[in-house]
Image 1: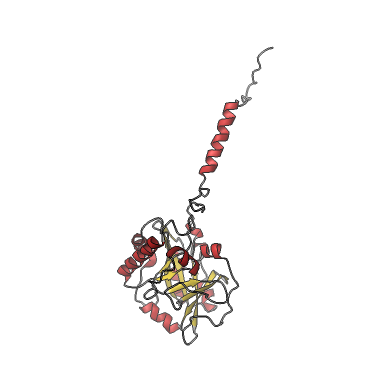
Image 2: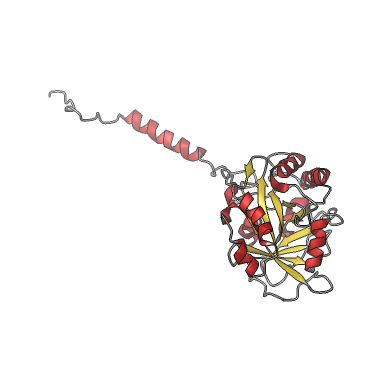
Length: 290
């Protein structure tokens, strides 16, 4: 029987060895894809996505969303006057924000994400930080912490150099350290409770050294218990910003008898995240002046 040869332009059929090699290559790529690695604690790593990380984004993912509180409801831990001031927090996922619209709706303070780790800066930060000021609001900046990537002092330095500095102009609130679940893997970034406490302390000390102000700590009670062992040593000097999307702020982390800011919903008008300062507008101004 004559040997068969493919005609002009027709590919040779793959050999069995070539087919096996191709399958092995595909399987190797699937195993190596970012986001598919599993840590010892069962968590899955993910590729960097700082534009998806904002104040409370991982809290919602881990702890869920409750029914928002009604405006003017009585809240645990309020100042004696019962006064509150409405605010918002924003990041790059909000894009350019209509600050005039928020002002007309009663918003009087705003925080913008400035940095994450030691390699990311918010591309919308200028509009989100200067816009509230131009609209007549008191403004501030926050840092999304990645304790597993670099030291606390290094991240405080980066934050201050890229928007997190403070000035005594009466319109600038002290910076915020956003401590929440790791968006890229192990919830506590692979740190023991003792190492996490040391990391936070290093950040706070460095920030105070740069600015003369004590940074506010943003954290949920659930994360604080899990990742610091419910440490109670920061409440004397560092104000608390607590997220809880329900009818009250709920249980607070150890060391704080009251919150300074409450993030009470992630589904508010215009930007999603809405907050309440625990006190009168005069007290908010006092926090800005230091």
